[in-house]
Image (cartoon, rainbow, N blue to C red; front, side, top):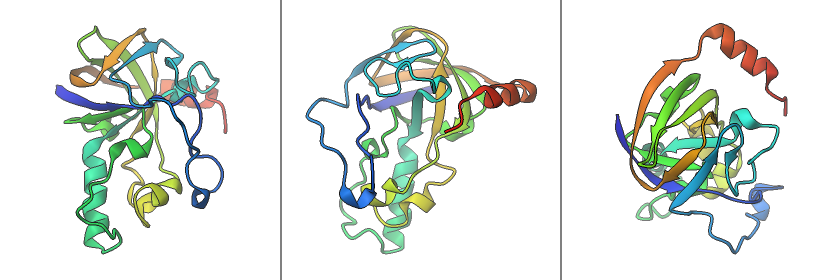
Length: 190
């Protein structure tokens, strides 16, 4: 299946820390590179979740279409004051923003993503749940509206490279329930 990677987000430190009303922690570096290196079982080189104990959730994906849908829903409810300003999918703080892929359908699956540099296998066992920060980043009501639509968390199973631009996803295979249970049980509890 063909898709597009529209943004990559790699942040060396948490920017949404503390209370949302206090705002994001400033960062002077470039968090949206055109290309990023992927390391098996470690994540994206340079990201704050690289090589942490949360390997099962070291890479996050979201569909740009879900952020566009969020904007339409909130603008229709009259909650978004500047209806002519589009929501920026980078503000969701997911590592990979795609277009043309139902990302949420990939939870509890393994899949292969190829951005032109060779295939990289990923395993997703959990969704990426939204947090209260979404109300600050987008508009009041965004946190609730994104439930079930905020993307997935996954673990890279191969080394490789991802780039902004055309990509393909193949080899989508459901994780067997007994394997999923074992993986979730092994995953660290936050």
